Length: 493
Image (tube, rainbow, N blue to C red; front, side, top):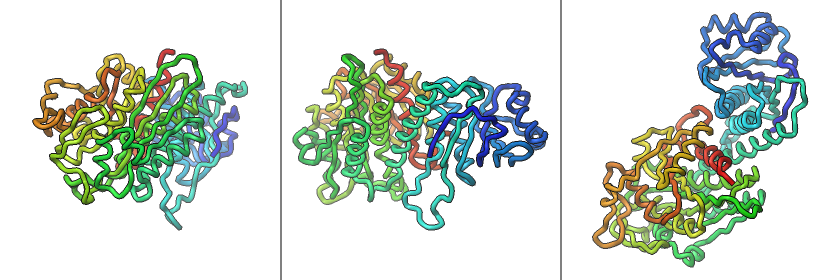
């Protein structure tokens, strides 16, 4: 697939699909729309009025090419009346590519804006819009069409600048990183073990100049991570712990550590999930996938920030040596933990990973985890919970989310609920009551972050979708990558 910039005319470009976004209260009088209508011999506006199309955000209108229009098909995408944010342009590109790949392979898309942020968003939307997980499809089930060439049309006479071409390259890098995260979430657990996940991280790190240190089971024992090892006890697969590092080579810059939950499959352990509850548990490593993608994207964009990715990975199974409710284990931090429910394993592996990350002395520390069903009950399937022990960090992340278009909601760390984690035989219990379960999970994690400025991002809902929605496909979404990159780009140096 190639993405290029061109100043060719909308009327003369010969592609399978020409896509144009329409916006504003007076969109029917938009000069571009009127030009297209003239090229279609008046058929475009006539059809729009007949169909009573309103150009609402994300709505599409299709018309076969006719008259002087060389494109085989024309697609209008509604962009609403609001300001055209980068995410609005990303959605335009995603909608266009999804429409194209049903029947063709070449796309032309008119850029609503031509600033660097807009062009980058269009390029990453084209890249992620073309995403399909077809790894296991054979014969007639294989997709018959794929995007081969995309042209972003600039409605201007000047040739595309070097800065514009760099923005396109940056967008492709972001989109490819998001697609990698999606792939990792979609691959089933029989093909993606903890070892496999670490191998992917190491391989991709080598490609993009990121260092990656991988610890096997013996290495994890030497690091002193009893909680990660406890969760792994019921499995025949070894755990892995890995640490990715991107350094920009600057004398001084912010240091940010991202921590990811890497449960490649969660059966619930001895506190077994239902069959339906287990069905999508290959996605319980979405936090790890997001973490990997963030570090790789930061390196490819050459951001002026030192970025670390720390991932603890295993599956949670029911073997004869599995950890049990009532067991007590120490942690890397030194605190002892009484096990209450073996299906609350994610916070255990994160506890050791957060203690490790804290020792890196970051300016900010953030974890992504598909941690609690309780967060989905509170916020639904499309929004992540944002917990933080620092108001400045929380506000910065909310601002980044507004830029990215990903949905987060600030959640409280209610100290009144801390008593639920008191144990009669250990320093901590690792779960509280069902009520406020996402909050007590976050409070448990807070025990291991020390004085670091920290945010916990519970992505249990948006980490995987049951259907395509907005910019996200069905299956793994890569949720969290875009916001993290906006946050990193906004950091003062």
